[in-house]
Image (cartoon, rainbow, N blue to C red; front, top):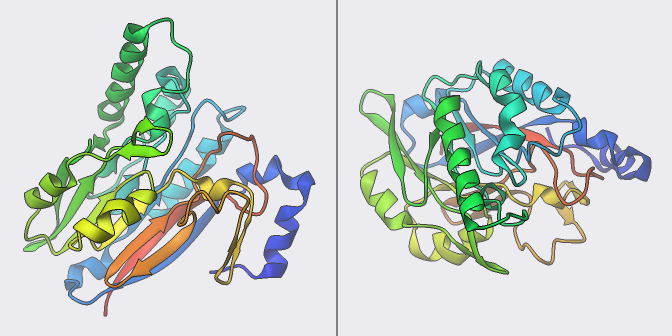
Length: 289
């Protein structure tokens, strides 16, 4: 349920900056698709994003997120990047905790820009590459399927009814430019699916490429911005100091038959708290119409 202005204003009080980072919300979104098969209306699709493990002062923040996901009983669970802040070992204290997370149709993930370790100081290129290889090894150890740029999965929701899931990269190639991988190949590999969902960490991908090149992608799930951690988003009003940098930085956007959802993230980075913008896990209800 959307909060009112009176509910959100107390969250902007500076004294709440640190405590807000632990005020995780489960937000629900209903999306409508004209040709959705019947079985999809029973699907519990859950998105979480941007853990930035290593930035939490202890394990309690992520432990609460795990409890919320278990209660949601997702059929399909999607993680949209930034498992760690810079180094693979940041996630090691959480490995055992995450072992009990399950979803009937699987858990899928993509990489975020922080997962490459580009902002850390490494003694040499070999050390950075070794860290990245350890990062990649975390996903199979968790039982998650990592979709690299252009990889896809065809998921049978019910006999004769399938969902196509495509993964995009978030590899930074310059200050404001990212490489997303071969999304066209991923789409071709799930041709004929009843619904096509793209997992792409960077929400700018939607405007840069998805809307112009891939009208077949009905839903894009992103993260990255954390809702910029400081701002106001209520009743259609979206205000943030960093809103100028990201034209689509929080919640739901639609153009024609295509949706983009920008998750506010579970964790935090480049600032240890939140004002106005609380962390979230999202439950999507898919409906025909």
